[in-house]
Image 1 (tube, one colour):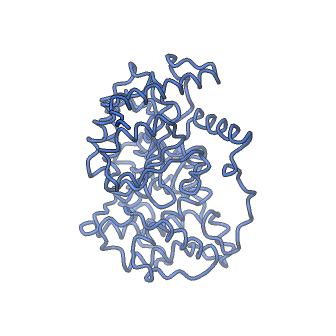
Image 2: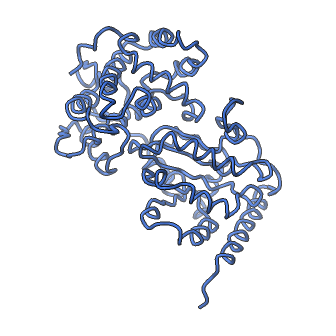
Image 3: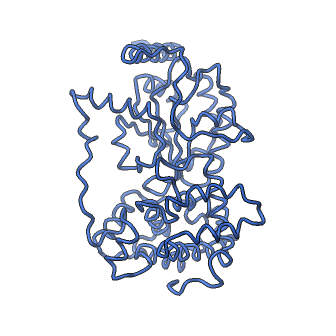
Length: 427
C-alpha cells in the first residue's frame, strides 16, 4: 500500500475541517465566514499591553494551578477571530511572551479544540514554525497537554507532525472527549471555559447514546468527614480540630519545609508524582498521620501546601477583597504597602491569622533566595493565584499582574504589613 504524502494529509485535514464546518452549520445555522459572536470571557482591556491586538480576544488564559500544583494555561480555539483579523505571527510571539513567565516551573496546557474553523485556523506552516519555536525550555517543563473535544482533524494533524515530535513529548498528549473527564485533573469550576465550548460539550453528551455521557454525571455531594482537610472551609477545620487556629496541613507542611526545603532550588516551582499527592491528601482527609520524610521528596509537602490553599471553597483572601486587590495597580507605588495593610484589615480574624502564618513562612523562604532562587517576586507568581480568585470563573491573564504585585508586597514587606514579629504559632 502506497505511503500517504504530507501534501495529501494536509488536504485531508482541510477537507475534514470543512466537513466539521458544514456539520456545525447544519446544526446551528452557522456560516464559516461569519465572525464569532461575542463571548463572556475575561479579555485584555489594557491598550498598552505589548500584544494588545492578540490579548484582547482572550484566546490564551493562565488560570492558576491544576490538581498537581502545576501552572495551568488555557488556549481556546473558538475565541480566535477569522484569519484576516488576527496576525498569526503576533499570536505566536504572544504565546512565547506569556509562557516565558512560567516555563521555569512545571506547567500544563489545556487546548479547547472546538471552534477551530476553515476561516480562523492558522496554516500548517505556522503550526510547524510554532512547534520549532517552542524549543526545549518550553517543552521540558510541560507536564501534560490536554486536547479537549478532539476531532479527526486533530488526528490527521498528529500524523503530519509525528516525524517531528519526540516520543517523550508525545506521551504528554492526552485526548479528553468530555469536560467531565478533566475533573480528575483540574478544578473545572474555576476554569475560564467559553460558553461555546460548554454548549458543545452538552450536545456531545446528549448525542452519546441518546443522553448524557455517563462520566459527566456528577454524583450527589457527600457530607465531609469529620477529619476532612481538603475542600472544606477554614471554619470547618477549626471546629473539627478543637479550635486550632492553623489547619494541620499548613502547620505540618510549613514545619517540614522550614526544616528541609529552604535550600532547595525552585521550591514550590516543581510538581510531584500525581498518585503520591492523591495518597497524601487521602491520608489527611482520613485523619491518618503523614510522615513527609518517608517520601524522600521535598516537593511533596510543597505541592500539598499549594493544593490545600487552592481547594479552599473560598480563597484565603476571600471573595469580597478580590476587586480591592486588583485595584492595587492604581495606587502610587510609594503608597502600596500601606494600601495592602488597609486591605487586609477587612479580612475575618481567622483568615488574617492563617494568612499571617503563611506569609511569615514565605518571607523566610525569600530570605534564602540566593540559594533557592525564590525571590518575593517568584513566590508571588506561585502563590498569588492560590490566595485570591474571583467568585465566578478564574483569574484571567491580565488579572495576574495586580495579584502578583499584591502578593509580592505581602511577602517582601511582611513585617510592615502584619507586625514586627512572626505569630506565636510559628513552629
